[in-house]
Image (cartoon, rainbow, N blue to C red; front, side, top):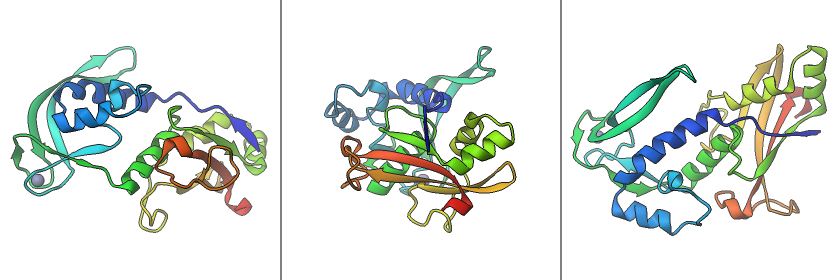
Length: 216
Ligand SMILES: [Zn+2]
């Protein structure tokens, strides 16, 4: 198997812009919770990875807020510029004065970490592995290995069937007309066994394996 470095976390960088702009309007509770986290973490993740806003009326987490975006010629896309204190619930359609902040469930934390890791976020410890079958496939079809890594990073077809635990730890995709899988396993830091708590980054080393279905 080959170990490969992770790609540039472009999508994540954008998400961090959102979180950073959002940060000054955190409730006191979530701000204190953020400060209790390690100093290595920047302001951008103060509430981003352990809490979420919900609608105080229907409890849905489909909360959106008004914002301005400006065109960025460098990336050819809209970039968030400013957010405003006007929140709306997409589920019940109500105007929300102030969303309620609640802790994420353990499953949500693991799912978010898995998504970030798969998309190349270096803050999530672990490595990506490509099986010999995948390497040969890329080689014989004249493709770059980064192609398959990007395909896996972009995967977003999660269903009840392929993601029954809602942790986003497995996916099936087609690459160069071949049926392929990716999966994430959780090891402890010295790789001597499984992680005791996959939601705890200080005790978990993730391994994302990309393989041909026939190698499973
Ligand atoms: Zn609502």
